[in-house]
Length: 216
Ligand code: MD3
Ligand code: FE
Image (cartoon, rainbow, N blue to C red; front, side):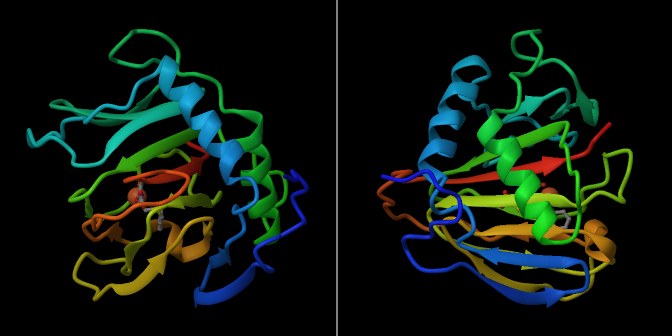
């Protein structure tokens, strides 16, 4: 077992063009994935995964938790970032070092030096979970990118445009894929289709997605 970030024992990662401001780093997080999963467990032991409720009163099908100075929450009163977990009243757990390092390295590979996220959302998908087309616009500053990391079962990602009506491109996201969403893409509509049943050696029946943000 090696922890050398640049020893890609399953083959070299590669980059794929998707659109302006988007850099897809295929398999970038494969070697660190076991460490990331361990860290997800530690965060979730302090701030357990939960199904948040949308302002419209629907329970989200993806379970979520957060780490960092700010966490994203939704309830009947709306979407927002806040420093405390509404379930416990405690501050969100700190972003694990392994997460920060990955986020910084991925952002740098995409041309953003010195990316220090203050919010990390962790989404957990089980069979049947999905995320409809939406924009991420609750953050203060859109000049920083969002870095996303996919772990475990594959899913079909939908990448739209600046308007909800823009026809989305379908992009498969697999274990270890990291995507840096900056430039105009930062505010584009996006979502994921329903997770299909399956088994992954590291994550079992789940897909996890980490998103690193500069929210405050
Ligand atoms: C493109 N998560 O947490 S990750 C989210 O797979 C979210 O869990 C999805 O959308 C997931 O808000 C998609 C890829 C992603 C994340 C944020 C983006 C793509 C993005 C923000 C702007 C544009
Ligand atoms: Fe999003």
